[in-house]
Image (cartoon, rainbow, N blue to C red; front, side, top):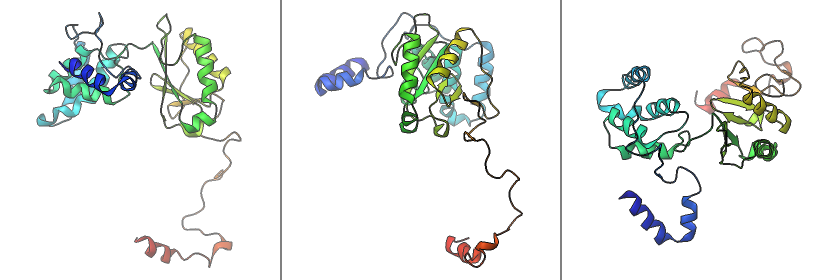
Length: 257
């Protein structure tokens, strides 16, 4: 019924709306042999324990608060994507109508409703990454893997999708591959990363969970650490050349401290 209503609405809105409906794989559900309401899905015994632990964090009348972490658990179990049967299972666990879960799964781009590759590459194309060369990174990935944005390689290893800001602007351009960030990329280093994945080699992550691919540490600039090399000055110390120009008491009063 929902599918018929959606089709009728698109027909009324004209051809442009129908084109937009296919812009992203989250736009609508299409039955596949491995993705139907009747397709069985259940959590593994280990994940059932995890699911109960997740739900135990919320009061009994707020079990719906566990929808997002339970969807994430189901997606990880199912190879990186959510079949409709998995969403129905989550709905049953938290005690809500399936539509409430569909709404969450189709709103957040962290959830995939179509199969993705073993290595799911999310390429940031927002302004800081763009001006630092994300288009060249995208071309290098597409040329090396023989796919276009939004496609998966025939061997099922890689899926490429361009996304909005992933919050690593200081180390642009970057990609998120599965759970890890790879930053400060060049066309050469991203191809080396892809080849390492093909060989089954995993790059070690840095102390903060991401890996600048140019050898730098975290967000340090190309010259390394250039300030506070000897630690901060003593508490409340003020430079002699600033004394008399700043009245800390007036600043505090102005700020309402």
